[in-house]
Image (cartoon, rainbow, N blue to C red; front, side, top):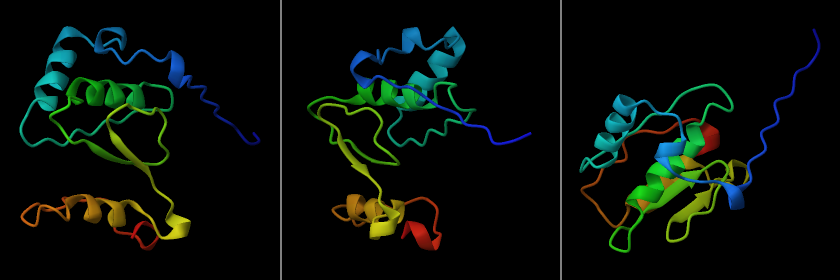
Length: 124
């Protein structure tokens, strides 16, 4: 009974963003790499606290991050700062939610459709 607290300690300066170190099986790693290298991609990572969701996504972003790519992320919060990646932390209380940021990210490409996100009032 009583309240429970989960504390996650993440040392961004000491974090190795390497798929080899994340514990993927060979098949899982290949599926992830295949998804990362598709022209159009949506990768959904789920799991309990501490299972490696964020590290898996940041490791994937690190692989994709080159000088010829313009990568933008909308995060809550930005956990690991990646050099060369445009990372934005949302602030729903200040009117800066996921939907507002993603619409701004896609604005230069009128034919590009924002495929989702929480459309709730707090995320506009």
